[in-house]
Image (cartoon, rainbow, N blue to C red; front, side, top):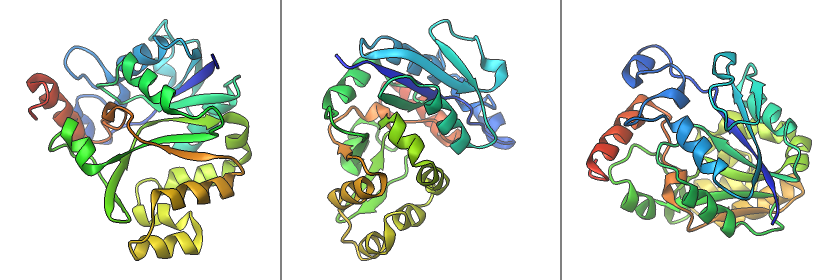
Length: 252
């Protein structure tokens, strides 16, 4: 079995009123029921036989808060810096790169995702059609992007070829900076990809092919992975949804 280091990004913050509304400034530390999304992510990854070292990029005040973590990396000035610093600390050929604000992730979800990733994939990212995601998390605040005739959202856990990712630092920085804008993300695909997006002709296969060309590796969209990998707490509204969902066991 291939061993993978896991890099967890735990430096994201809420600002001002959002922090008050969520109940914590650091996104990973908001409470959903009796635990935090950070604890859920760490437990889910640590339970996987495929995971070797667990690396967390976080503010200094979080360092040492979990004995399950093998290495702590100081946060950088930007989210892009955190991604690159975390990957630079990995020792395996490929690594799991995960957000820390996934309140419903379980060990079985990690295993389900990993078993779907082809052994030769350099970048593997779970995607979900709108109906598929909302069947599990109805009325969630998750954002969707139109790709061709369907709307999709993506997961907050992926597989990356560490060496190849670090060699594509410029692309990683641009992609991270553009992640909140559908138009900006489409522009990363080049003029052809942007035109396809604007005219409704962009397909998942086009994205896979173009990202493979840009990175020099094989990029794969993973279908059928558990939607919990995409249900994050990126806003105070999503935190409130997660709490309501948990209390009602899916009736939010």
